[in-house]
Amino acid sequence: MRPNDLPSPSRPERADPVSAEPFLRGLIQQATRQDGQPPFSDQSLVGMRGGSRELLLMDEVAAAILSPTEAELVVAPDARARGNGTTMLEAILAARPGELRIWAHGDHPAARALARSHGFEPVRELLQLRAPVVAPAHAEPVEPFRPGVDDEEWLRLNARAFATHPEQGRLSQPDLDALLGEPWFDPDDFLLLRGADGAIIGYCWLKIEGAVGEFYVVGVAPDRQGEGIGRRLMHAGFARLAARGIRTASLYVEADNVPALRLYRPLGFVDHSIDIQYARAT
Image 1: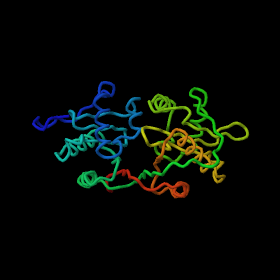
Image 2: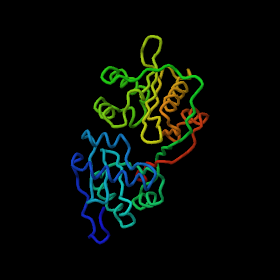
Image 3: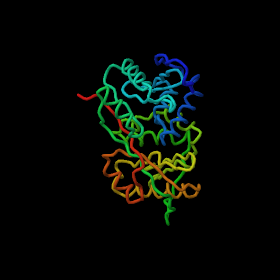
Image 4: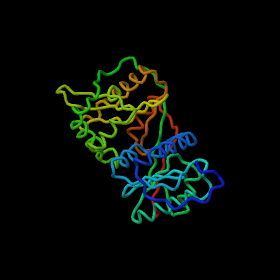
């Protein structure tokens, strides 16, 4: 990263995601080690690589990913407390002068102070929960996702299951293609539950990187809610994680999603970290 004796960084500029990928990957790794979680969501990275989100870079000290209405930013650990976060945030606000929401992954004091200094206040909380992986006595029979075969049916179900979710419910075929191309993707970790007629009625998509296995997304057909399908899918996910030797499970859930929390808490999930979304105070 930048030596301490170099001059102040230039203004943030739009960057090509392809040419910036090596630097961005290193920056994400450094910030993740420092903060305990990645600075950008998968949706942001997929959108950036697909062209629906914009990348801003400030020399080799900071980066931001912007959609028309949302932004995420990170400052390199050894370049913090020097005003670089303020410079990047002001560049984001100049690029997106309308209504904008900004994610801070981890409820860090510096992020709260930066948000307050520019008139932002918390409007959404996303919890990361963790639980020990215990193989259930009985696991639901499920099938692996078949790329190129199950795409269309799964996308329709996902849109229905997450109709009110601002990110997951808008997943498109190009988004899915990008996710299926991620290094961590394994079709055997994408579990589909089918009904008597063969249609998908629920799914449990696992994301396994390192020692932690994430319940990346769990969805149930709206017309099958209340039948215990969510719990059955969670048991199938735990069985798969145990079979792969994973001992810790994680997932993300909206802090106000009471039904989901009622499902996850009895399975051993406890709070691990929190992401905060900020918006300008009105």
